[in-house]
Image 1 (cartoon, rainbow, N blue to C red):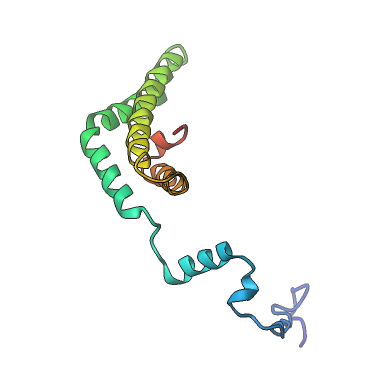
Image 2 (cartoon, one colour):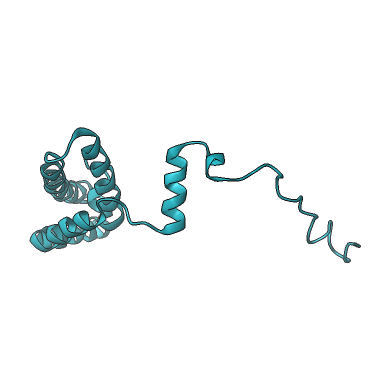
Length: 142
């Protein structure tokens, strides 16, 4: 196969064949790797996705004013002069902390009904979903 003018090397190189070693489910190594593969292949929803979605829907409904105030405080900070910026950022952080406390309370109340291992898995999933869905409140969620 020749190299077209202007190219340093061929557009496609020869790709080696598949490994002749058997590639069954045991070749993945660990149970965790298999679980991840199954979740990707079968697109399973995380274990607590429905309850967390309902909890966050409830949070957004009950704390709509706090969310609006937080958005307004961020806009005020972004539009503030150099002299006002520190105070505006403090106002914003106070509102974010209030939201984080409310979310942590919601999370911990439900986690308290679970055994320790399950509660840890729930907390991780809850925190991940808060960072995705309500990123302002998920950064310092403790």
